[in-house]
Amino acid sequence: MTSTTTSLAELERQAADRTSRAGFGHDALIACDQVVRIFTADGVEVQALQGLDLLVAEGELMALVGASGSGKSTLLNILAGLDVPSAGQASVGGNNLLTMDAAQRLRYRRETVGFVWQQTARNLLPYLTALQNVMLPMQLSGARSRRRVRVERAEELLELMDLADCRDRRPGALSGGQQQRVAIAVALANRPEVVLADEPTGELDSATAEQIFAAFRTANEELGTTIVIVTHDQSVASEVRRTVAIRDGRTATEVLRRTEIDEHGRESVVAREFSVVDRSGRLQLPRSYTDALDIRHRVLLELEQDHIGVWPDHSADEQARDR
Ligand SMILES: Nc1ncnc2c1ncn2[C@@H]1O[C@H](COP(=O)(O)OP(=O)(O)OP(=O)(O)O)[C@@H](O)[C@H]1O
Image (cartoon, rainbow, N blue to C red; front, side, top):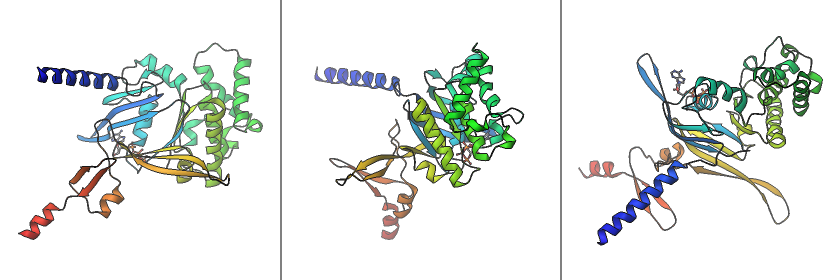
């Protein structure tokens, strides 16, 4: 009798577990759940994303960082609706990125997301003025707004990006930084829920990069747009509240920053780095830690009251010594 009660309770617990898993990220704007992307090139399989979990809340301004080849661009292309995961779940603003049909995908790319790429040439058409570039996505979206309304919206966005005087100039007559700010205005044209940016400051000097970052912050604060920036630029990464690091196709660590005020009223930003535990309980140890303790294969874990101890396993060395 007792065992029946236990197993029922266990079944109920498992069912509750399943229900909560089904709702993973239900209140997040971007929800990636164990996303896998496998490429096959010359008969060789590359697992660019290996079960990546990521949640981004509405209104966040966050950065994605990671070594070259860690999977950042693959993830961004999936979120942009340009590529499809091999397995897992991914949604943005309620759009399921795995099951959208071609028409839904086109609408998603025009209306739900905006992009800013590193190469300015990919962002703007060279023969259109700044104003015309910003108006173009509105024309393409098929919304039947009047030309006057589109001009006004484009002018407002250029003003927000501090580019009102560049309205009638073509990209060739703008600096790299101005071009990227026009690109942000273009990305915002159709009031997307999310703007995705891939190394938007990659080709710019640090002072100009700062202006670009300030433009993203303005868009985030004034328009409430959620912004995800892939960057190698440490100064950009340290300006945002949350930086997620990707390693080997998975989210590995997150740095969270918050402003603290001391007893003298002085403000300072305090940053803490956390390791991410994925939904299967997997955790990546920082490479500097594993190197420092020569951890290669296994570790010993011990559950303490308020923490878990992780010890290197040197039993193989000990056995060799004993022999
Ligand atoms: N179309 C493709 N075909 C085959 N392999 C690919 C393809 N796209 C990406 N990869 C591989 O997937 C892995 C992740 O690449 P990705 O471009 O996402 O990394 P990244 O973190 O953006 O790197 P970087 O910072 O250099 O842009 C790499 O090993 C890459 O070679």
